[in-house]
Image 1 (cartoon, one colour):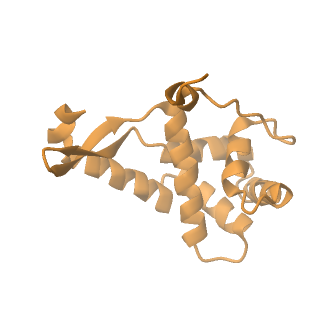
Image 2 (image 1 turned 60 degrees about the vertical axis):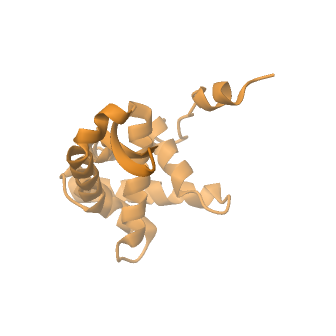
Length: 157
């Protein structure tokens, strides 16, 4: 019988998507997925990437990679309860977890954005993140500021 901790620590094998043959795109598709409609979930990032190619005349995969790299946090804070009070303890982020956070924050920023379709909002957010601006990058900077402010509690790890 497997222990719960060994199952939780096992890495999931992420497959690559059919068109771009890229794991990052597949991670994005999996996070876009709602109500189990995978064909619709594939359409959104593909349309966004098509629009990125039209707008920037660059490879949309490199723009997407640059965007995710720009949003990926180095440190986050975790709540730790010590002696009746809760502290925000800064913790370094594992690269795989950082990438997942970056994708999640980008999609949250896309959904908050005003615009017609999710594909348009997603392409705009990706292009902004690649230029080091946009809501998702702001979220990363805020997270880093909070971690910096709570550096005194790092010994509670």
